[in-house]
Amino acid sequence: MTIRNIAPLPQVESIVRAAGPIVRTYHDRTDDIAWKGADDPVTAADRAVNQFLVAALRQAFPGDGILAEESQDDHARLDVERVWCIDPLDGTKEFIARNGEFSIMVGLAVAGEAVLGVVYQPIQDLMYSGIRGVGAWMTTPAGRQTLTVSTIADPASMRLVVSRSHRNPITDALKEALGMTQERISGSVGLKCGLIARGEADLYLHPAPGLKEWDTCAPEAILVGAGGRLTDCWGRPLRYNRPDVARHAGLVASNGRCHEHIIARMAPVLAAAGLEPERAW
Image 1 (tube, rainbow, N blue to C red):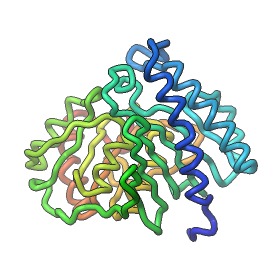
Image 2 (image 1 turned 180 degrees about the vertical axis):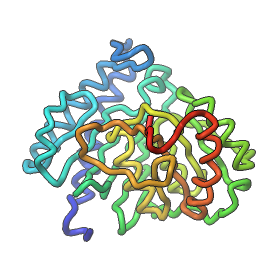
Image 3 (image 1 turned 90 degrees about the vertical axis):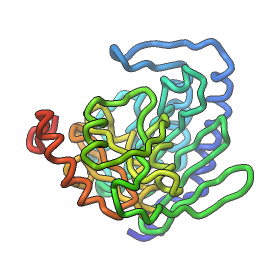
Image 4 (image 1 turned 120 degrees about the vertical axis):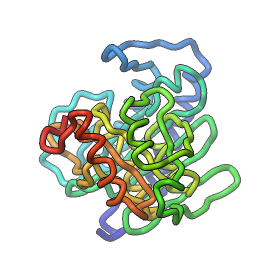
């Protein structure tokens, strides 16, 4: 994959940044909350940002497919090679809690692989962006800097980043199996992977179903651009633009220094919990 095969990153960053004022407007209002499931809220902000991003990306890249969390998936995307994966508000519970730990995420998958990602934290005006095989960057009001993952190669010395609202009970057993003692809490998959990309955390485990392609595309491109790795819980690469967009086999994001060792140490814990790769939840 060469940079010429990928959309211009500044153009995508500009589109995602333009969605920030929409989030900030709704952030200052009383919530309009609906529920897609028992533990799956959606707000007016989710819907408004989704509508804006879908329209802007369709106008900018008319030949590409779209997979957006708050849009009906008609599977037309399956007929094209390039697909935009949109999560208009990753961390809706954090948005409702007004703690700032939510983000707008847009990723591009080409031929089933995450190649470009932008994750924007609008309240803090912090943006992560990256291109697979090229690099990753963090942009704040203070400027732009290149991101590089840490060099820590011993799981016991790694800093685990965990979910504020979706902590899985298996996470504690995995943490013990890896001998880890350091932990940091954050919302949004994109923000967790951003912490790893900037070297402030080293590992994120999501040993459960629940994630979708729009949750992982942008974070993966950024993390890989910074030198890290992202796979399912058995070390298999993630594929995009499939009929079933669910991440049934969970997620492991790391600095890449001992990813295979971590996967091997996780296997007995997952098996003891009744989770096997062929069953894939």
